[in-house]
Image 1 (cartoon, rainbow, N blue to C red):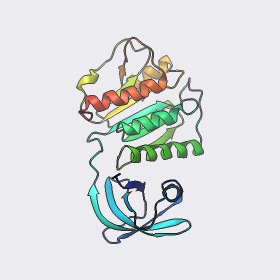
Image 2: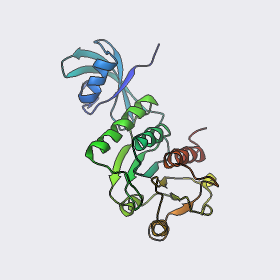
Image 3: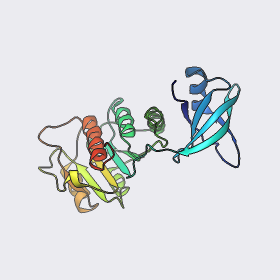
Image 4: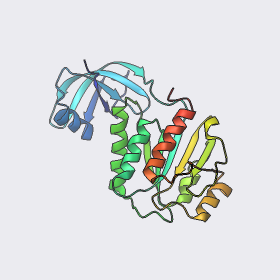
Length: 243
C-alpha cells in the first residue's frame, strides 16, 4: 500500500483547530492529478517540520477540507543547515539544480546574478523555482521545502551567508582548496557560479571581504549544474547526512 499523498498547507492551527483547508495549486494537484476523494488519508505539511495525518472530509470546486487526526515531527531534515548559492543558469538548468539540491537536503537556495552570468530572473521564474522546491521536497519525503531567493548581484548573495560556520567558494581557477572539505562540521554555505564562471575580482572579494574559502573540484572543469549538485552531495556526505 502506498504512503498517503503529501501536501503543503498554510491553514493549519492544530491542535486548537482540527480542520484544515487545501486550496490553490496544491488543491488542483490533489483533485485533478492525484484524484483525491472524500475519505482519503493524506499528509499535510506546515513547512515548519511537522507532518499531520488527515482525512479528506469535503471536496468543493476550489478547495478541500480535511480533518487532522494527529501530528508527528518530520525525521528527514538535515541536522545541519546547508545553504547553496548558485549563479542563474540558462534554460531550465536552474530548476534542475533546485530540484536536486532539495533532494540532497539543502535548507536554503540562493540564485544570483554576477558579471559573467547571461541568464536572467523575474518574479515568475522565482515563483516557479519555489514550486520546484516544494514538489521535490514532497517527492523525497521532506517536511520542509527550502526557500529559493534571488540576489541581483554577487555581493548581496555573499553577504547573506553571514554567520555560517563554513563558507566555501567553488571556482574553476582555484588551484587548490583552502580548507579540507572532508573535515567540515557545522552550518555550511556553498557558492557555485553560472556557466560563465567568476571574474578574478569576484573571487578575491569573496575571500577578502566576505570570509569565504576558495575551493577546487579537481582537475576537470564541470558544467555549472553538475558542480552545484556535486557540492551539495559532498557537503551532505561530509556532514554525515548520507550515512
